[in-house]
Image (cartoon, rainbow, N blue to C red; front, side, top):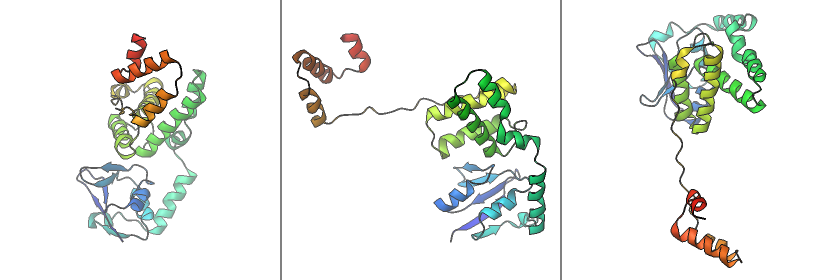
Length: 236
């Protein structure tokens, strides 16, 4: 059984570290506000009310070592129960907006955005707030940068996916909430894809499937000269 270490860093954030284990990684990803630090090989969480209880609940049954400083913050079961009951009976306005994004949906539909775009924009804005564990009025430039880094490194998202997330965040926080910092977000470089190289047998099959002599000659010229699609359009 892997041993899980829970401690504080100098900024007060809660640090969780453990040896590589896909099962433990899947568990930690269920906790909102998480952030992976590849250099230090640990996860961090904002030290807010309730976060320590969530971490302990997720890793229940595992061998856990808690730093003595955090031991004082570890609440009793009754305190946890009261906290969860309060959250469920009195959700904050930001929490409601976080899960619904009705204002974003109405604005997108009014501008005649497609159903697919509306669905995508709401998804990325909701996923962003789940990642930061904040309300829309609390997020800042660093939160967006951390989220995009999470998409690029941890989720290994394609450039097109990250660009869609940027578009979704810029629309909501820039166009709707008028936050200026969101316009400074940089877009990722395009993915570099290697060309598909056909084998000799595949090339021979293509050439032998053409009966017209002129067409076969054109294909042989294109292949032997290594012409690209743009080059072919220019030459032919």
